[in-house]
Length: 145
Image 1 (tube, helix red, strand yellow):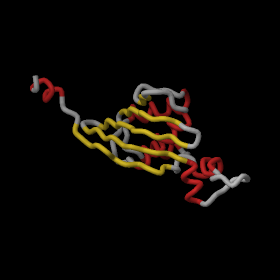
Image 2 (cartoon, rainbow, N blue to C red; image 1 turned 180 degrees about the vertical axis):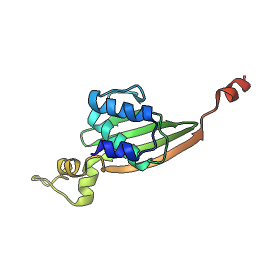
Image 3 (cartoon, rainbow, N blue to C red; image 1 turned 60 degrees about the horizontal axis):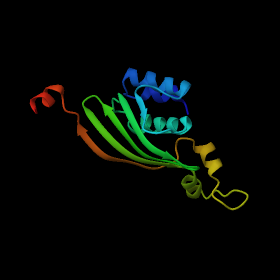
Image 4 (cartoon, one colour; image 1 turned 135 degrees about the vertical axis):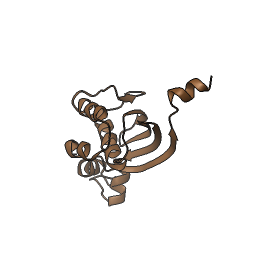
């Protein structure tokens, strides 16, 4: 994954881009919130997909609610981008990718290690927007009281 190129092509905020670089180096960052532990390598795959699939979105912060299995990483990512919010359901699954490629290991199982190595972050079986809405302004919130 060429993180520098992905960040350069993205419309994400400079603060979010800085936090992506910080996460890559340290495994945590203020604008990348995880609701539970997830292996940093899997979060980095999610970030690569986000920066590519949502390239035009001015991402400012995200919240990831996901579970990590042996061959998969699945859940939702809530994206805040200026006055917009987007919720995406995702499944990253190297076993699925191996099955799609017809790759088998020595024992006849889908060669998920090969798929993870060769495809890296590009093993997303699902990337689906399930919610898009405007974030209310402070004035709208105050007027609602």
